[in-house]
Length: 148
Image (tube, rainbow, N blue to C red):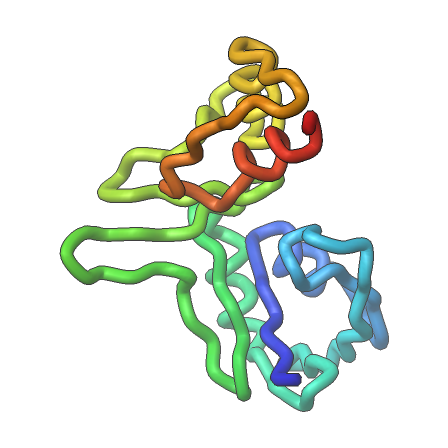
């Protein structure tokens, strides 16, 4: 399976402060898995051999509003401009922003806490149906399903 590595300002800063081999989570904390990244004088080398120059890591480290991903040696912003502007925002966990509007509250909270608060308000019981409008990353559907 093809590896895709996600980088935010957090990972970029960690890599810039490291030397030699460093283990870092590269899946937006979806799992607890960490990958070995080799820090060389002018670049970081990822497990698949992809290289990211330190100058590029410095730009990512300054960009606190964007998620980047590394695939087959190419670095991309996790954003699409087609009929609107959609981007992944590096909150923990991530949220989607559509035309500048975040799909979850993030001020003084995070998307997971926001979702749990919404579910608590509705308080679905086992066997009841919940309509998820499929406008985000599935947090509401996942939390609803956990409750039966």
